[in-house]
Length: 391
Ligand SMILES: Cc1cc2nc3c(=O)[nH]c(=O)nc-3n(C[C@H](O)[C@H](O)[C@H](O)COP(=O)(O)OP(=O)(O)OC[C@H]3O[C@@H](n4cnc5c(N)ncnc54)[C@H](O)[C@@H]3O)c2cc1C
Image 1 (cartoon, protein in one colour):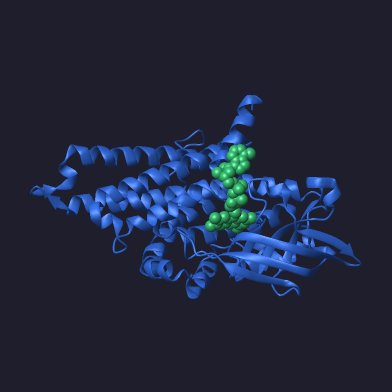
Image 2: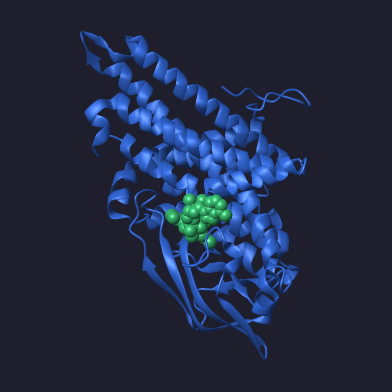
């Protein structure tokens, strides 16, 4: 277990400061007391409990890195990672809601917004307003820069037309960091980031996906029909949205890694408890070496994934270059989560295969880690480019 950080540096990667331990323990307690009782129903109904979401704001978990002057918690990226991990241990949908708000939307605004935009949006995000990050489209996923949504400057506004797909938090979000091309002739150099408010005329939320996992997290289409967004809502520079999107997602990937290690830990803890309780051949099944070795494999893989995720997060907070480590952490932790949750089902036997027990959900929830914020192939591409380029 992590110890209090006493040394300057370097320290073991799993060391936490006293503040971090306190933060983690509070988040864990909240997840156990308030989220766990709702998980099954939220998954079945594919709806996130609105009152629970309000509690996330009250606890300061929706503006972890937002400075105190804007009403945020003024914390570090690492705390956001701890929150996503702890929530995902209980419910990966809760984990991704917190993840998108902190590591993508608030992060993009903190990094790229001007002072006026920060004053307008950060206090709302810290207090009660959910954000979403809208890059993907039906025809552009891995090839994100092929996006077809257009932004045409007309007078004081950019008029947006197009459709976004797969947008996490789409149903509940009120502000969207949304990417459109303001100069298609310039290719990706026309891509521009906008802050779009839900009540803008011409903006609507389309179909909600019926998913395999993270079912309580909404994933929706967004429709833009002559949606006039004021020039003041351009985030960063016109034509530099490609940079905003890449750099935000580089950081966001560490958050997905945290979601994956949370899921894997939830499944491992459930397996440890179940294999103690379950009796076959007159003894607990965890007395069989075959079962013990599977638990040991699961714990070892989780430890490796956790070290990678924590290291990437610490590197980001230290201002070091972390792109390769973030891609590796997401790639490895999503694979580890899939393997660990799959083994958990087997350790539960038939009970693992039914919805009365928690492990089939962990497995379903783990699958998304290999897909969003860049598929596993895209992570491999990034890692390969960086190692072959000597970085
Ligand atoms: C539940 C969910 C939530 C999401 N949330 C968001 C969100 O909030 N915001 C957002 O913008 N997007 C979101 N996405 C979209 C997600 O990021 C994309 O689905 C993902 O990037 C993959 O794109 P795609 O689905 O178009 O697959 P494709 O890009 O069509 O990929 C299909 C397959 O081809 C492979 N492939 C593609 N190109 C290459 C290549 N050059 N080399 C090797 N292999 C390749 C991929 O690895 C994959 O295996 C979400 C998706 C899901 C399912």
